[in-house]
Amino acid sequence: MNTLVLELPAAPARRDGRSHLYAALSPSLVVLAIFFALPMGLMIGISFSDAASGTLSLANYHRFLTDGLSLAGIGRTALMSFLVAVSVTILGYPVAYFLARSKGRTRAIVFALALAPELAGVVLRTYGWLIILEDRGFINDALLHLGLIDAPLPLSKNLFAVVVGLTHVVLPFGILSLMTSIQGIDPNLERAAQMLGASRASVIRHVVLPLSVPGIVSSLLISFTMAASAYATPALLGGAGFKVLATMVYEQVLFYVNWPFAAVLANALLLMMLAVSFIGIRFEARRRAVHKGLTGGAS
Amino acid sequence: MNRMTGILFWLALLAVLAFITMPIVVVVAASLSPTSAVSFDPSQWTLRWYADLASQRWLQPFLLSVEVAAVVAVTSGVLGLLAAYALVYERIPASDAIMSFLLSPLSVPQIVKGVAIVLFLSQIGLQGLLGTPALIAAHVVLALPFVTRMVATSIANFDRGLDRAAQILGANKLQRLIHVLLPMVKPGVLSGVTFAFIISFNNIPLSVFLVRPGDTTLPITVINYLEYSLDPVMAAVNVASMIFILAAIFTFEKIGGFSAQIHGGSK
Image (cartoon, rainbow over all chains, first blue to last red):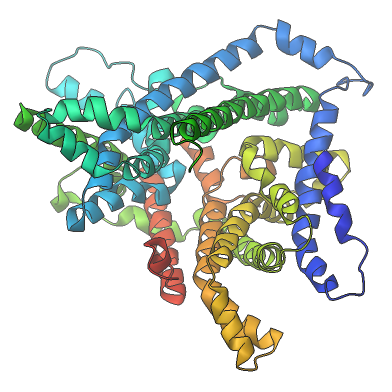
Protein backbone atom coordinates (compact mmCIF):
# COMPACT_ATOMS: atom_id res chain seq x y z
CA MET A 1 0.00 0.00 0.00
CA ASN A 2 3.03 2.26 0.12
CA THR A 3 2.43 2.96 -3.51
CA LEU A 4 -0.69 4.96 -2.71
CA VAL A 5 1.35 7.68 -1.03
CA LEU A 6 2.93 8.50 -4.35
CA GLU A 7 -0.34 9.93 -5.51
CA LEU A 8 -0.34 12.73 -2.92
CA PRO A 9 1.85 15.28 -4.71
CA ALA A 10 -0.81 15.45 -7.40
CA ALA A 11 -3.52 16.64 -5.03
CA PRO A 12 -2.74 20.31 -4.30
CA ALA A 13 -3.20 22.13 -7.60
CA ARG A 14 -0.50 24.74 -7.29
CA ARG A 15 -0.90 27.83 -9.37
CA ASP A 16 2.49 27.73 -11.04
CA GLY A 17 3.37 26.56 -14.53
CA ARG A 18 3.31 22.96 -13.39
CA SER A 19 -0.28 22.51 -12.33
CA HIS A 20 -1.38 21.45 -15.80
CA LEU A 21 1.24 18.70 -15.71
CA TYR A 22 -0.20 17.29 -12.51
CA ALA A 23 -3.61 17.54 -14.12
CA ALA A 24 -2.29 15.51 -17.07
CA LEU A 25 -0.92 12.87 -14.75
CA SER A 26 -3.80 12.58 -12.31
CA PRO A 27 -6.29 10.53 -14.40
CA SER A 28 -3.78 7.66 -14.69
CA LEU A 29 -2.91 7.87 -11.00
CA VAL A 30 -6.55 7.97 -9.94
CA VAL A 31 -7.51 4.99 -12.15
CA LEU A 32 -4.62 2.89 -10.88
CA ALA A 33 -5.18 3.93 -7.26
CA ILE A 34 -8.89 3.02 -7.32
CA PHE A 35 -8.80 -0.08 -9.50
CA PHE A 36 -5.36 -1.46 -8.67
CA ALA A 37 -3.68 -0.22 -5.46
CA LEU A 38 -6.85 -0.12 -3.36
CA PRO A 39 -8.14 -3.56 -4.46
CA MET A 40 -4.68 -5.10 -3.97
CA GLY A 41 -4.46 -3.66 -0.44
CA LEU A 42 -7.96 -4.81 0.36
CA MET A 43 -7.23 -8.29 -0.97
CA ILE A 44 -4.13 -8.64 1.20
CA GLY A 45 -6.09 -7.36 4.21
CA ILE A 46 -8.99 -9.75 3.63
CA SER A 47 -6.68 -12.75 3.52
CA PHE A 48 -6.13 -12.11 7.26
CA SER A 49 -9.81 -12.07 8.13
CA ASP A 50 -12.13 -14.87 9.18
CA ALA A 51 -14.53 -16.00 6.44
CA ALA A 52 -17.57 -16.19 8.73
CA SER A 53 -17.11 -13.48 11.37
CA GLY A 54 -14.83 -11.06 9.52
CA THR A 55 -12.48 -10.76 12.50
CA LEU A 56 -8.70 -10.75 12.28
CA SER A 57 -7.38 -14.28 11.97
CA LEU A 58 -4.67 -16.44 10.50
CA ALA A 59 -7.12 -19.31 9.94
CA ASN A 60 -6.97 -18.99 6.14
CA TYR A 61 -3.21 -19.29 6.11
CA HIS A 62 -3.45 -22.19 8.54
CA ARG A 63 -5.87 -23.92 6.19
CA PHE A 64 -3.61 -23.15 3.24
CA LEU A 65 -0.65 -24.86 4.91
CA THR A 66 -2.54 -27.82 6.34
CA ASP A 67 -5.32 -28.85 3.91
CA GLY A 68 -2.82 -30.60 1.64
CA LEU A 69 -4.69 -29.58 -1.52
CA SER A 70 -3.27 -26.07 -1.57
CA LEU A 71 0.34 -27.13 -1.18
CA ALA A 72 -0.21 -29.84 -3.79
CA GLY A 73 -1.59 -27.06 -6.02
CA ILE A 74 1.56 -25.00 -5.52
CA GLY A 75 3.69 -28.04 -6.30
CA ARG A 76 1.69 -28.75 -9.46
CA THR A 77 1.92 -25.10 -10.52
CA ALA A 78 5.68 -25.10 -10.03
CA LEU A 79 6.18 -28.42 -11.84
CA MET A 80 3.98 -27.36 -14.77
CA SER A 81 5.70 -23.96 -15.07
CA PHE A 82 9.16 -25.52 -14.83
CA LEU A 83 8.39 -28.02 -17.62
CA VAL A 84 6.98 -25.21 -19.79
CA ALA A 85 10.02 -23.00 -19.13
CA VAL A 86 12.42 -25.77 -20.14
CA SER A 87 10.44 -26.80 -23.25
CA VAL A 88 10.04 -23.20 -24.41
CA THR A 89 13.74 -22.51 -24.04
CA ILE A 90 14.82 -25.70 -25.84
CA LEU A 91 12.30 -25.33 -28.67
CA GLY A 92 12.85 -21.59 -28.95
CA TYR A 93 16.63 -21.74 -29.18
CA PRO A 94 17.05 -22.91 -32.81
CA VAL A 95 14.42 -20.42 -34.01
CA ALA A 96 16.00 -17.58 -32.02
CA TYR A 97 19.48 -18.47 -33.32
CA PHE A 98 18.22 -18.51 -36.90
CA LEU A 99 16.44 -15.15 -36.47
CA ALA A 100 19.50 -13.58 -34.86
CA ARG A 101 21.93 -14.74 -37.54
CA SER A 102 20.08 -14.45 -40.84
CA LYS A 103 18.68 -11.70 -43.04
CA GLY A 104 16.26 -11.25 -45.86
CA ARG A 105 13.10 -12.96 -46.98
CA THR A 106 13.42 -16.31 -45.21
CA ARG A 107 14.06 -14.51 -41.94
CA ALA A 108 10.94 -12.38 -42.42
CA ILE A 109 8.83 -15.49 -43.07
CA VAL A 110 10.22 -17.36 -40.06
CA PHE A 111 9.73 -14.26 -37.90
CA ALA A 112 6.10 -13.94 -38.97
CA LEU A 113 5.44 -17.66 -38.48
CA ALA A 114 7.01 -17.61 -35.04
CA LEU A 115 5.22 -14.53 -33.74
CA ALA A 116 1.88 -14.32 -35.59
CA PRO A 117 0.22 -17.01 -33.44
CA GLU A 118 0.39 -14.53 -30.57
CA LEU A 119 -2.31 -12.50 -32.32
CA ALA A 120 -4.64 -15.47 -32.60
CA GLY A 121 -5.39 -15.39 -28.88
CA VAL A 122 -5.13 -18.11 -26.29
CA VAL A 123 -8.60 -19.56 -26.91
CA LEU A 124 -8.04 -20.41 -30.56
CA ARG A 125 -4.74 -22.12 -29.86
CA THR A 126 -6.06 -24.04 -26.88
CA TYR A 127 -9.01 -25.14 -29.00
CA GLY A 128 -6.58 -26.34 -31.67
CA TRP A 129 -4.72 -28.46 -29.13
CA LEU A 130 -8.01 -29.86 -27.83
CA ILE A 131 -8.86 -31.07 -31.34
CA ILE A 132 -5.36 -32.49 -31.81
CA LEU A 133 -4.89 -34.22 -28.45
CA GLU A 134 -8.39 -35.44 -27.54
CA ASP A 135 -9.14 -39.16 -27.15
CA ARG A 136 -11.03 -39.07 -30.43
CA GLY A 137 -8.81 -36.30 -31.74
CA PHE A 138 -6.45 -35.96 -34.53
CA ILE A 139 -3.34 -37.80 -33.32
CA ASN A 140 -5.21 -40.69 -31.70
CA ASP A 141 -7.41 -41.04 -34.80
CA ALA A 142 -4.38 -41.25 -37.04
CA LEU A 143 -2.56 -43.75 -34.82
CA LEU A 144 -5.66 -45.95 -34.46
CA HIS A 145 -6.21 -45.84 -38.21
CA LEU A 146 -2.65 -46.91 -38.88
CA GLY A 147 -3.08 -49.71 -36.37
CA LEU A 148 -0.16 -48.53 -34.27
CA ILE A 149 -2.24 -48.46 -31.09
CA ASP A 150 -5.38 -50.31 -29.95
CA ALA A 151 -6.71 -47.77 -27.49
CA PRO A 152 -6.38 -43.97 -27.57
CA LEU A 153 -3.28 -42.61 -25.83
CA PRO A 154 -4.04 -40.40 -22.82
CA LEU A 155 -2.91 -37.16 -24.46
CA SER A 156 -5.53 -34.74 -23.15
CA LYS A 157 -6.93 -33.77 -19.76
CA ASN A 158 -3.58 -34.16 -18.04
CA LEU A 159 -0.26 -32.46 -17.29
CA PHE A 160 1.13 -33.39 -20.72
CA ALA A 161 -1.64 -31.57 -22.58
CA VAL A 162 -1.30 -28.47 -20.38
CA VAL A 163 2.48 -28.33 -20.88
CA VAL A 164 2.06 -28.66 -24.67
CA GLY A 165 -0.61 -25.95 -24.76
CA LEU A 166 1.27 -23.53 -22.52
CA THR A 167 4.56 -24.10 -24.33
CA HIS A 168 2.77 -23.04 -27.49
CA VAL A 169 1.31 -19.95 -25.81
CA VAL A 170 4.61 -18.81 -24.26
CA LEU A 171 7.04 -19.79 -27.06
CA PRO A 172 7.01 -16.42 -28.94
CA PHE A 173 8.12 -14.61 -25.76
CA GLY A 174 10.91 -17.13 -25.18
CA ILE A 175 12.07 -16.76 -28.79
CA LEU A 176 12.15 -12.96 -28.48
CA SER A 177 14.24 -12.93 -25.31
CA LEU A 178 16.67 -15.56 -26.66
CA MET A 179 16.93 -13.71 -29.97
CA THR A 180 17.80 -10.40 -28.32
CA SER A 181 20.54 -12.07 -26.32
CA ILE A 182 22.03 -13.97 -29.29
CA GLN A 183 21.99 -10.80 -31.40
CA GLY A 184 24.24 -9.22 -28.78
CA ILE A 185 26.97 -11.84 -29.35
CA ASP A 186 29.67 -10.71 -31.77
CA PRO A 187 29.42 -13.01 -34.85
CA ASN A 188 33.20 -12.62 -35.28
CA LEU A 189 33.70 -14.82 -32.22
CA GLU A 190 31.94 -17.65 -34.05
CA ARG A 191 33.97 -17.03 -37.20
CA ALA A 192 37.20 -16.98 -35.21
CA ALA A 193 36.38 -20.29 -33.52
CA GLN A 194 35.49 -21.81 -36.88
CA MET A 195 38.75 -20.62 -38.44
CA LEU A 196 40.63 -22.17 -35.57
CA GLY A 197 39.10 -25.47 -36.60
CA ALA A 198 36.02 -25.85 -34.39
CA SER A 199 33.10 -27.70 -35.97
CA ARG A 200 29.75 -25.93 -36.15
CA ALA A 201 28.38 -28.07 -33.34
CA SER A 202 31.25 -27.18 -31.05
CA VAL A 203 31.01 -23.47 -31.94
CA ILE A 204 27.40 -23.58 -30.78
CA ARG A 205 28.27 -25.55 -27.66
CA HIS A 206 31.41 -23.72 -26.56
CA VAL A 207 30.86 -20.19 -27.87
CA VAL A 208 27.21 -19.34 -28.52
CA LEU A 209 25.55 -21.27 -25.69
CA PRO A 210 27.77 -19.93 -22.86
CA LEU A 211 27.49 -16.35 -24.12
CA SER A 212 23.72 -16.55 -24.42
CA VAL A 213 23.20 -17.63 -20.79
CA PRO A 214 21.51 -14.28 -19.91
CA GLY A 215 18.98 -14.88 -22.70
CA ILE A 216 18.44 -18.45 -21.56
CA VAL A 217 17.83 -17.28 -18.00
CA SER A 218 15.40 -14.57 -19.06
CA SER A 219 13.57 -17.01 -21.34
CA LEU A 220 13.26 -19.48 -18.44
CA LEU A 221 12.02 -16.80 -16.04
CA ILE A 222 9.50 -15.18 -18.39
CA SER A 223 8.14 -18.60 -19.41
CA PHE A 224 7.86 -19.71 -15.80
CA THR A 225 5.93 -16.60 -14.73
CA MET A 226 3.63 -16.66 -17.75
CA ALA A 227 2.86 -20.35 -17.27
CA ALA A 228 2.28 -20.03 -13.52
CA SER A 229 -0.25 -17.25 -13.98
CA ALA A 230 -2.07 -18.73 -16.99
CA TYR A 231 -5.69 -19.57 -16.44
CA ALA A 232 -7.48 -20.66 -19.62
CA THR A 233 -5.02 -23.27 -20.89
CA PRO A 234 -4.78 -25.32 -17.65
CA ALA A 235 -8.54 -25.02 -17.17
CA LEU A 236 -9.38 -26.31 -20.67
CA LEU A 237 -6.56 -28.76 -21.41
CA GLY A 238 -6.04 -30.05 -17.88
CA GLY A 239 -9.57 -31.26 -17.26
CA ALA A 240 -11.52 -31.01 -14.01
CA GLY A 241 -8.97 -32.83 -11.86
CA PHE A 242 -6.01 -30.67 -12.86
CA LYS A 243 -5.74 -27.90 -10.27
CA VAL A 244 -3.10 -25.17 -10.31
CA LEU A 245 -3.12 -21.95 -8.26
CA ALA A 246 -4.81 -19.92 -11.01
CA THR A 247 -7.71 -22.36 -11.44
CA MET A 248 -8.00 -22.84 -7.66
CA VAL A 249 -8.35 -19.08 -7.18
CA TYR A 250 -11.09 -19.03 -9.81
CA GLU A 251 -12.91 -21.89 -8.09
CA GLN A 252 -12.79 -20.19 -4.67
CA VAL A 253 -14.23 -16.98 -6.09
CA LEU A 254 -16.93 -18.31 -8.40
CA PHE A 255 -18.00 -21.65 -6.86
CA TYR A 256 -17.27 -21.47 -3.14
CA VAL A 257 -17.47 -17.66 -2.86
CA ASN A 258 -14.84 -17.83 -0.12
CA TRP A 259 -13.19 -14.41 -0.51
CA PRO A 260 -10.59 -14.71 2.25
CA PHE A 261 -9.32 -18.08 1.02
CA ALA A 262 -9.32 -16.90 -2.60
CA ALA A 263 -7.22 -13.96 -1.40
CA VAL A 264 -4.74 -16.32 0.32
CA LEU A 265 -4.34 -18.36 -2.87
CA ALA A 266 -3.94 -15.21 -4.97
CA ASN A 267 -1.30 -13.93 -2.54
CA ALA A 268 0.56 -17.24 -2.81
CA LEU A 269 0.59 -16.89 -6.61
CA LEU A 270 1.73 -13.28 -6.33
CA LEU A 271 4.54 -14.25 -3.93
CA MET A 272 5.66 -16.97 -6.30
CA MET A 273 5.86 -14.41 -9.15
CA LEU A 274 7.73 -11.89 -7.02
CA ALA A 275 10.20 -14.57 -5.91
CA VAL A 276 10.89 -15.51 -9.53
CA SER A 277 11.40 -11.90 -10.62
CA PHE A 278 13.66 -11.38 -7.59
CA ILE A 279 15.84 -14.27 -8.78
CA GLY A 280 15.95 -12.59 -12.18
CA ILE A 281 16.99 -9.23 -10.72
CA ARG A 282 19.69 -10.86 -8.56
CA PHE A 283 21.04 -12.78 -11.54
CA GLU A 284 21.19 -9.65 -13.68
CA ALA A 285 22.91 -7.67 -10.89
CA ARG A 286 25.52 -10.38 -10.39
CA ARG A 287 26.17 -10.65 -14.10
CA ARG A 288 26.63 -6.87 -14.33
CA ALA A 289 29.01 -6.93 -11.34
CA VAL A 290 31.10 -9.71 -12.95
CA HIS A 291 31.09 -7.88 -16.27
CA LYS A 292 32.21 -4.67 -14.58
CA GLY A 293 35.00 -6.54 -12.81
CA LEU A 294 36.19 -8.04 -16.10
CA THR A 295 36.25 -4.74 -17.95
CA GLY A 296 37.79 -2.84 -15.02
CA GLY A 297 34.62 -0.84 -14.51
CA ALA A 298 34.96 0.70 -17.94
CA SER A 299 31.51 -0.23 -19.17
CA MET B 1 30.08 -33.43 -39.66
CA ASN B 2 29.31 -29.79 -40.33
CA ARG B 3 26.78 -30.78 -42.94
CA MET B 4 25.16 -33.14 -40.47
CA THR B 5 24.87 -30.32 -37.90
CA GLY B 6 23.38 -28.06 -40.55
CA ILE B 7 20.77 -30.64 -41.53
CA LEU B 8 19.88 -31.33 -37.88
CA PHE B 9 19.56 -27.59 -37.26
CA TRP B 10 17.17 -27.15 -40.19
CA LEU B 11 15.12 -30.16 -39.12
CA ALA B 12 14.83 -28.76 -35.59
CA LEU B 13 13.83 -25.35 -36.96
CA LEU B 14 11.18 -26.84 -39.26
CA ALA B 15 9.83 -29.06 -36.46
CA VAL B 16 9.41 -26.08 -34.14
CA LEU B 17 7.73 -24.03 -36.87
CA ALA B 18 5.39 -26.96 -37.55
CA PHE B 19 4.60 -27.12 -33.82
CA ILE B 20 3.83 -23.39 -33.81
CA THR B 21 1.53 -23.43 -36.85
CA MET B 22 -0.17 -26.80 -36.26
CA PRO B 23 -3.02 -25.80 -33.91
CA ILE B 24 -3.90 -22.80 -36.07
CA VAL B 25 -3.95 -24.84 -39.28
CA VAL B 26 -6.09 -27.47 -37.56
CA VAL B 27 -8.62 -24.90 -36.31
CA VAL B 28 -8.89 -23.29 -39.76
CA ALA B 29 -9.41 -26.75 -41.32
CA ALA B 30 -11.96 -27.64 -38.62
CA SER B 31 -13.93 -24.47 -39.33
CA LEU B 32 -14.21 -25.47 -43.01
CA SER B 33 -14.88 -29.19 -42.51
CA PRO B 34 -18.40 -30.45 -43.27
CA THR B 35 -18.64 -32.52 -40.05
CA SER B 36 -16.96 -32.42 -36.67
CA ALA B 37 -14.24 -34.72 -38.07
CA VAL B 38 -11.46 -32.44 -39.28
CA SER B 39 -10.97 -32.72 -43.03
CA PHE B 40 -7.92 -31.49 -44.91
CA ASP B 41 -9.48 -32.10 -48.31
CA PRO B 42 -10.26 -28.67 -49.81
CA SER B 43 -12.86 -30.18 -52.17
CA GLN B 44 -15.05 -31.03 -49.16
CA TRP B 45 -14.69 -27.69 -47.46
CA THR B 46 -17.77 -25.64 -46.75
CA LEU B 47 -18.58 -22.25 -45.26
CA ARG B 48 -21.79 -23.44 -43.58
CA TRP B 49 -20.45 -22.99 -40.02
CA TYR B 50 -19.64 -19.38 -40.73
CA ALA B 51 -23.32 -18.77 -41.49
CA ASP B 52 -24.09 -19.40 -37.82
CA LEU B 53 -21.89 -16.50 -36.75
CA ALA B 54 -24.62 -13.98 -37.45
CA SER B 55 -26.79 -15.44 -34.68
CA GLN B 56 -27.32 -13.39 -31.52
CA ARG B 57 -25.47 -16.04 -29.52
CA TRP B 58 -22.16 -14.99 -31.10
CA LEU B 59 -22.92 -11.52 -32.36
CA GLN B 60 -23.80 -10.08 -28.96
CA PRO B 61 -20.57 -11.15 -27.18
CA PHE B 62 -18.56 -10.08 -30.22
CA LEU B 63 -20.08 -6.59 -30.16
CA LEU B 64 -19.48 -6.31 -26.41
CA SER B 65 -15.83 -7.32 -26.85
CA VAL B 66 -15.37 -4.76 -29.61
CA GLU B 67 -17.06 -2.05 -27.54
CA VAL B 68 -14.95 -2.77 -24.44
CA ALA B 69 -11.71 -3.05 -26.45
CA ALA B 70 -12.40 0.22 -28.30
CA VAL B 71 -13.14 2.16 -25.11
CA VAL B 72 -10.10 0.61 -23.40
CA ALA B 73 -7.80 1.38 -26.34
CA VAL B 74 -8.85 5.04 -26.54
CA THR B 75 -8.85 5.58 -22.76
CA SER B 76 -5.48 4.01 -22.13
CA GLY B 77 -4.05 5.75 -25.21
CA VAL B 78 -5.11 9.19 -23.94
CA LEU B 79 -4.16 8.55 -20.28
CA GLY B 80 -0.86 6.94 -21.24
CA LEU B 81 0.06 9.82 -23.55
CA LEU B 82 -0.74 12.43 -20.87
CA ALA B 83 1.19 10.57 -18.18
CA ALA B 84 4.23 9.90 -20.37
CA TYR B 85 4.22 13.55 -21.45
CA ALA B 86 4.31 14.83 -17.86
CA LEU B 87 6.85 12.25 -16.70
CA VAL B 88 9.24 11.88 -19.61
CA TYR B 89 8.95 15.07 -21.66
CA GLU B 90 8.53 17.56 -18.80
CA ARG B 91 10.22 15.43 -16.15
CA ILE B 92 8.21 16.70 -13.18
CA PRO B 93 9.67 15.98 -9.70
CA ALA B 94 9.67 12.33 -8.60
CA SER B 95 9.09 11.19 -12.20
CA ASP B 96 10.91 7.91 -11.69
CA ALA B 97 8.95 6.98 -8.57
CA ILE B 98 5.63 7.89 -10.22
CA MET B 99 6.59 5.91 -13.32
CA SER B 100 7.35 2.84 -11.17
CA PHE B 101 3.90 3.15 -9.65
CA LEU B 102 2.29 3.42 -13.09
CA LEU B 103 4.17 0.31 -14.26
CA SER B 104 3.66 -1.69 -11.05
CA PRO B 105 0.53 -3.58 -12.28
CA LEU B 106 2.82 -5.33 -14.77
CA SER B 107 4.37 -7.42 -12.01
CA VAL B 108 1.03 -8.71 -10.74
CA PRO B 109 -0.49 -11.73 -12.56
CA GLN B 110 -3.76 -10.92 -14.33
CA ILE B 111 -5.74 -13.49 -12.39
CA VAL B 112 -4.63 -11.81 -9.12
CA LYS B 113 -5.65 -8.38 -10.42
CA GLY B 114 -8.99 -9.90 -11.44
CA VAL B 115 -9.66 -11.36 -7.98
CA ALA B 116 -8.63 -8.10 -6.32
CA ILE B 117 -11.03 -6.06 -8.46
CA VAL B 118 -14.04 -8.36 -8.08
CA LEU B 119 -13.38 -8.61 -4.34
CA PHE B 120 -13.08 -4.83 -4.04
CA LEU B 121 -16.35 -4.21 -5.91
CA SER B 122 -18.25 -6.75 -3.83
CA GLN B 123 -16.83 -5.47 -0.52
CA ILE B 124 -17.82 -1.87 -1.16
CA GLY B 125 -21.25 -2.89 -2.45
CA LEU B 126 -20.74 -2.05 -6.10
CA GLN B 127 -21.45 -5.49 -7.62
CA GLY B 128 -23.79 -3.57 -9.88
CA LEU B 129 -20.75 -2.45 -11.83
CA LEU B 130 -19.95 -6.01 -12.90
CA GLY B 131 -20.33 -6.43 -16.63
CA THR B 132 -19.32 -3.67 -19.02
CA PRO B 133 -18.15 -0.96 -16.54
CA ALA B 134 -15.98 -3.35 -14.50
CA LEU B 135 -14.58 -4.94 -17.66
CA ILE B 136 -13.54 -1.53 -18.99
CA ALA B 137 -11.95 -0.44 -15.69
CA ALA B 138 -10.02 -3.71 -15.29
CA HIS B 139 -8.83 -3.77 -18.89
CA VAL B 140 -7.62 -0.17 -18.59
CA VAL B 141 -5.61 -1.17 -15.50
CA LEU B 142 -4.15 -4.01 -17.56
CA ALA B 143 -3.39 -1.99 -20.71
CA LEU B 144 -2.36 1.39 -19.27
CA PRO B 145 1.12 0.34 -18.05
CA PHE B 146 1.96 -1.17 -21.46
CA VAL B 147 0.73 1.90 -23.33
CA THR B 148 2.50 4.30 -20.94
CA ARG B 149 5.74 2.38 -21.40
CA MET B 150 5.45 2.38 -25.21
CA VAL B 151 4.68 6.11 -25.38
CA ALA B 152 7.40 6.88 -22.81
CA THR B 153 9.94 5.07 -25.01
CA SER B 154 8.96 7.03 -28.07
CA ILE B 155 9.10 10.35 -26.16
CA ALA B 156 12.52 9.38 -24.78
CA ASN B 157 13.69 8.77 -28.37
CA PHE B 158 12.26 12.10 -29.52
CA ASP B 159 14.96 14.39 -30.88
CA ARG B 160 14.76 17.55 -28.76
CA GLY B 161 16.78 19.40 -31.39
CA LEU B 162 13.61 19.56 -33.47
CA ASP B 163 11.81 21.13 -30.56
CA ARG B 164 14.51 23.78 -30.16
CA ALA B 165 14.51 24.48 -33.89
CA ALA B 166 10.76 25.10 -33.78
CA GLN B 167 11.22 27.36 -30.77
CA ILE B 168 13.88 29.41 -32.53
CA LEU B 169 11.57 29.76 -35.51
CA GLY B 170 9.02 31.32 -33.14
CA ALA B 171 6.62 28.45 -32.37
CA ASN B 172 4.98 28.72 -28.97
CA LYS B 173 4.65 25.81 -26.55
CA LEU B 174 1.24 24.65 -27.74
CA GLN B 175 2.26 24.84 -31.40
CA ARG B 176 5.38 22.82 -30.66
CA LEU B 177 3.41 20.15 -28.85
CA ILE B 178 0.83 19.81 -31.61
CA HIS B 179 3.05 20.21 -34.66
CA VAL B 180 6.37 18.76 -33.48
CA LEU B 181 6.07 16.39 -30.53
CA LEU B 182 2.72 14.79 -31.37
CA PRO B 183 3.51 13.78 -34.98
CA MET B 184 6.84 12.34 -33.83
CA VAL B 185 5.34 10.17 -31.09
CA LYS B 186 2.21 9.22 -33.04
CA PRO B 187 3.56 5.80 -34.12
CA GLY B 188 4.35 4.95 -30.48
CA VAL B 189 0.91 6.02 -29.32
CA LEU B 190 -0.84 4.10 -32.10
CA SER B 191 1.11 0.92 -31.47
CA GLY B 192 0.20 1.27 -27.78
CA VAL B 193 -3.46 1.74 -28.71
CA THR B 194 -3.38 -1.28 -31.03
CA PHE B 195 -1.76 -3.39 -28.33
CA ALA B 196 -4.38 -2.26 -25.79
CA PHE B 197 -7.16 -3.18 -28.23
CA ILE B 198 -5.74 -6.68 -28.77
CA ILE B 199 -5.09 -7.53 -25.12
CA SER B 200 -8.53 -6.31 -24.17
CA PHE B 201 -10.28 -8.12 -27.03
CA ASN B 202 -8.53 -11.45 -26.31
CA ASN B 203 -8.54 -11.15 -22.52
CA ILE B 204 -9.61 -14.09 -20.38
CA PRO B 205 -7.96 -13.99 -16.90
CA LEU B 206 -9.52 -10.66 -15.87
CA SER B 207 -12.78 -10.95 -17.77
CA VAL B 208 -13.57 -14.36 -16.32
CA PHE B 209 -14.34 -12.70 -12.95
CA LEU B 210 -16.12 -9.63 -14.26
CA VAL B 211 -18.62 -10.81 -16.87
CA ARG B 212 -22.20 -11.53 -16.00
CA PRO B 213 -25.01 -13.27 -17.86
CA GLY B 214 -26.01 -11.20 -20.86
CA ASP B 215 -22.84 -9.13 -20.54
CA THR B 216 -20.19 -11.64 -21.62
CA THR B 217 -17.20 -11.09 -23.87
CA LEU B 218 -16.45 -13.31 -26.86
CA PRO B 219 -13.46 -15.27 -25.43
CA ILE B 220 -15.37 -16.07 -22.23
CA THR B 221 -18.43 -17.19 -24.21
CA VAL B 222 -16.16 -19.45 -26.26
CA ILE B 223 -14.41 -21.07 -23.28
CA ASN B 224 -17.75 -21.65 -21.58
CA TYR B 225 -18.92 -23.58 -24.66
CA LEU B 226 -15.61 -25.37 -25.11
CA GLU B 227 -16.04 -27.16 -21.82
CA TYR B 228 -19.02 -29.02 -23.30
CA SER B 229 -18.41 -29.47 -27.00
CA LEU B 230 -15.93 -29.15 -29.82
CA ASP B 231 -18.57 -27.99 -32.28
CA PRO B 232 -17.12 -26.81 -35.66
CA VAL B 233 -19.03 -23.55 -35.08
CA MET B 234 -16.50 -22.82 -32.33
CA ALA B 235 -13.70 -23.18 -34.85
CA ALA B 236 -15.49 -20.73 -37.16
CA VAL B 237 -15.95 -18.26 -34.28
CA ASN B 238 -12.25 -18.48 -33.41
CA VAL B 239 -11.07 -18.07 -37.00
CA ALA B 240 -13.43 -15.13 -37.54
CA SER B 241 -12.16 -13.39 -34.42
CA MET B 242 -8.55 -13.94 -35.50
CA ILE B 243 -9.34 -12.41 -38.91
CA PHE B 244 -11.01 -9.50 -37.14
CA ILE B 245 -7.88 -8.86 -35.03
CA LEU B 246 -5.62 -9.03 -38.11
CA ALA B 247 -7.92 -6.58 -39.91
CA ALA B 248 -7.84 -4.25 -36.89
CA ILE B 249 -4.04 -4.31 -36.81
CA PHE B 250 -3.90 -3.70 -40.55
CA THR B 251 -6.22 -0.70 -40.18
CA PHE B 252 -4.26 0.82 -37.29
CA GLU B 253 -1.05 0.25 -39.22
CA LYS B 254 -2.53 2.10 -42.23
CA ILE B 255 -3.42 5.04 -39.97
CA GLY B 256 -0.26 5.09 -37.92
CA GLY B 257 2.47 3.43 -39.94
CA PHE B 258 3.99 2.05 -36.75
CA SER B 259 5.68 -0.92 -38.39
CA ALA B 260 8.44 1.49 -39.42
CA GLN B 261 8.97 2.06 -35.73
CA ILE B 262 8.99 -1.63 -34.91
CA HIS B 263 11.70 -2.18 -37.53
CA GLY B 264 13.67 0.66 -36.03
CA GLY B 265 13.05 2.83 -39.10
CA SER B 266 11.64 6.02 -37.63
CA LYS B 267 13.56 8.41 -35.44
